[in-house]
Image (spheres, rainbow, N blue to C red):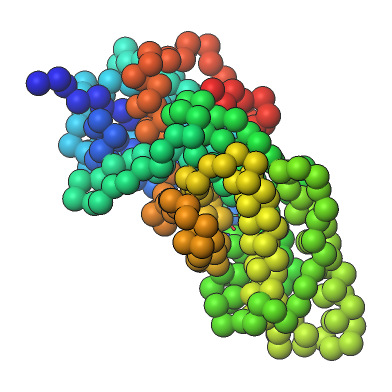
Amino acid sequence: MKKKTIILGIESSCDDTSAAVLADRFLLSNVMASQKIHEQYGGVVPELASRAHQQNILPVVDQALKQAAVTMDDVDAIAFTRGPGLLGSLLVGVSFAKGLALATAKPMIEVNHLQGHILSHFVMQEGKPYSEPKFPFLALLVSGGHTQIIKVNDYLDFEVLGRTIDDAVGEAFDKCAKLLDLGYPGGPVIDRLAKDGDSSRFRFAKPNVPGLDYSFSGIKTSLLYFLRDELEKDPQFIEKNKADLCASFQKDLIDILMKKLLLAVKQTNINQIVIGGGVSANSGLRNRIVEEGEKRGWDTFLPELRFTTDNAAMIAVVGHFKYEKGLFASNDIAPISRAADMNMR
Ligand code: KG4
Ligand code: ZN
């Protein structure tokens, strides 16, 4: 019997340190250490993130191997996030992977974090039903740093059809939450409060960007000026209208996302729709995708909630596909922070 391909994945692009082990795409372990320290600062502080990764990485990798009941001898390759992300955070994961690869004489595989979010749909789990999108499919990638519509032709063949020209949608969620004094990260809090709010109560400025690109900076400014005017009239305005503000702002963001996704479907005639990234945890967005999908005959794929946040299982699965093609990294590899500088193929 052919030996299973065992991939160790390592993720450290932002504020989550994670390590995972896959055997022929089946998840054996997925360990995560999230960094609480940033909450008190209202956003990720890059230097503190690097330090926390430095503290967490060895125990996290060790635990992932133990939980998977494998040793480094069993591992066929070490896949790590090369970028995009915070440089200081990426450096910890990349350097750790290089040291480990050198010490154990294992090949290394570089992974694009954004491809990881999308290919997380191909992670398999023992005893869990599995279905995967057929190529080519459209992916709506929505996270704290990125917002893109991508045509995925094959596991490693990605074509970016549209992207945000300014803020990411997760950033819009987080900035709105900051204005409403809801803490960081704000996306999950807005999601929760929106459930009790009236989403038709307020409307904010919608962007007017050509083609499949997005813009989220205008809507945030529109909310800022709206709140400033209302607070002048009534200092309790936010307190009294919190749920309606969250529901309305969230609806506007989802409308913006859906408008371009529908356009992309029309232009490409593709009916396999995948979402991924931190904001794909949003219940309003998930419901809307399913609803539109039922109406239009799409096959829709929503990631399990634990795969929406940054995790190493998604890095390991990209590693698996690259391993099969013999796409290994050289030992002088360095991280890349900007998405635009990264290869999507
Ligand atoms: O993918 P991710 O974990 O990190 C990046 O690669 O950026 O995404 C983090 C983003 C944050 O902006 C966070 O507020 C947002 O995802 N987020 C949500 C929800 N859960 C996380 N936004 C809206 N609704 C949620 N339920
Ligand atoms: Zn991410």
